[in-house]
Length: 400
Image (cartoon, rainbow, N blue to C red):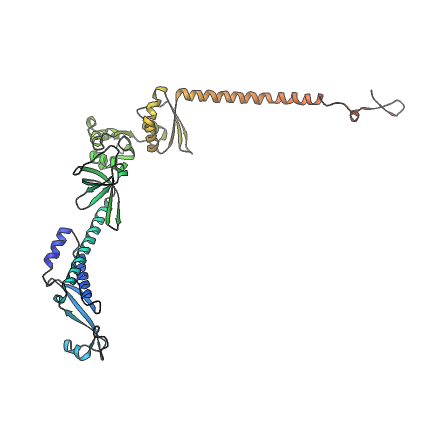
């Protein structure tokens, strides 16, 4: 511990990228820990790094008193004045100790503390570096599998590509290169944990930005992107320049740009759709290549009913409902698709129902009158119903 440590500190700072002050504090803490272990925490010690000589110096502090009670923490006034003639009773006197007096076990403790501090500083450095890179796409090398999860080497750190974030039917071997999206960075007990994803829509957006200069410059904007990883994806794009076609910019010359993205995503089919604020037009574009006949919109429920020709129904719905499902997620509305024939059948059924209701409403008054008349005829005459007349002689007699 008595050697010049400046060269060692500079080398560690250069190799590990650790702040010099952090390493100096680690050294001071390590030497102080070793000294306390040596003297079993019976003395008041402090450690300070001397930049000039490159050594960590340990000082023992004692209080100047008239009569010593605790020899480890107190010193007699006469003995203290032999060291410093200007001290008074109650002063704290610091005396430098020889680091060579520490045992080998104490030196080993110092070494372990230094290693621990260096590791902590490295972890903190990695975390600070990657926490601001969430949303970026990085390249890494596959190191190993752990219970279905991939451990990916990013250079300064290892990242985790969980099984749930992997695309079905994508297989990797050790030393394979992988391109993934940083979805999360968090600090755990074992250090910083970097979570990667191959299924996140952000990966699709980032890949297009790397291929399409208009996106990187802000001339074209991706308004939304949805995916069913490994199968199909849809992106909605808008141009902020009337002279730039957003779809054409993303497709590229002979489809070169979009093909590069498809290749990176291992053949995932991508639909590029022009964005429009009109939800009906946007929905029609999102269902492409299917043709749409009519659209009925419910603004309050954010739902729409779309009528397509009979021969376009399966194309609009897609395999296992994939096309309409992605379109609904892209525009953020609920979509109900019907064929022309089905829509006509429902309209006819509604017409018949309405006509029947009208006929029933018209017949109701006549039937009600007939029922009332029948009720009057059915009432039998009794004594209470006898009509009383007046006779010539002024008396009352029943009228036949």
